[in-house]
Image (cartoon, rainbow, N blue to C red; front, side, top):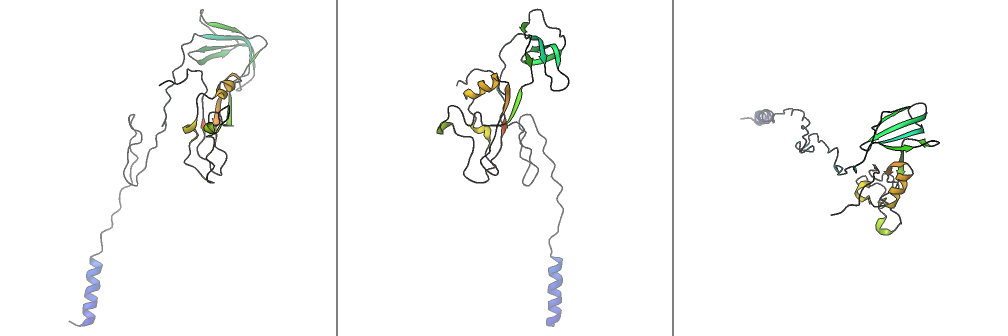
Length: 202
């Protein structure tokens, strides 16, 4: 066999031995189940994050139906209601208007000359993370160790017994945002719902 023919034969065999290239099917998003919404989808597949990694264990205190009447109600969705009423049941507003149908045994709050407004949302605070009174043990508002700490979550260091929560709640701030602010990218902030409750006991 001539050297030139051997070279051609070797190249031909090498070309035939190329591995087959197959197109893998696109991975489908795993079906989220109630018991495990973050089920493994396989390497490189689409992951489904847990939408609620820390589900609330809060249970409202027992309460009676309550009506606030003869108040000026600032609805924030339209004109103010003069001499209006608000009906609350199970900790929620169920009716607002010039007059509401309240149960006969409802607790009545007379509010002549007073104003009722929606609760305020504080988009940037450090309640719970920089608790009061301040101290090193309660200074968890920021992780100022690097310019970017995107993996830090504010809710991991919230102290529920911070006295600022009660003060804010009484002043109408019922949704404070515990924010990160010391870095270029400080991590994840959280909006908290301030509600009355007993201290945690284990």
